[in-house]
Length: 112
Image (cartoon, rainbow, N blue to C red; front, side, top):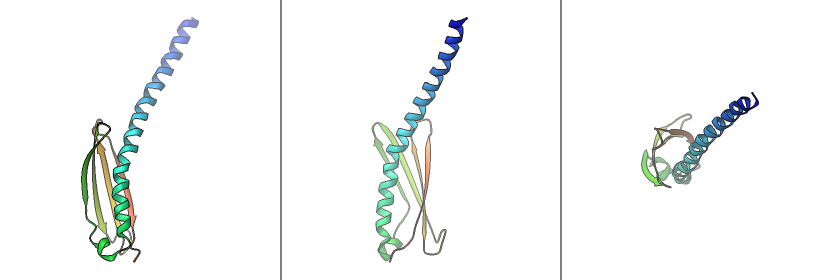
């Protein structure tokens, strides 16, 4: 009887460990892929200080392989959103892991 109870308890522990491993891998993919979004956002942030550079910000799409995983990033810009003269940037990051993706939304305002 004790062995049966122990076996059921161990099965629960194994299940939790398996789920934790899957979530750990997903978190690693999000962290690595976030560097692509961060790089784009840093460049866009620099443009906030120049009227010409700020007006010339455009949509961006890129694909890169990081640690064997293929990442695709697509960023779109919307003018005058949520406030006049601001730009809202929506970046969708996906990677070749069962169609997983993450979405990031930023708002840039002119600093000139």
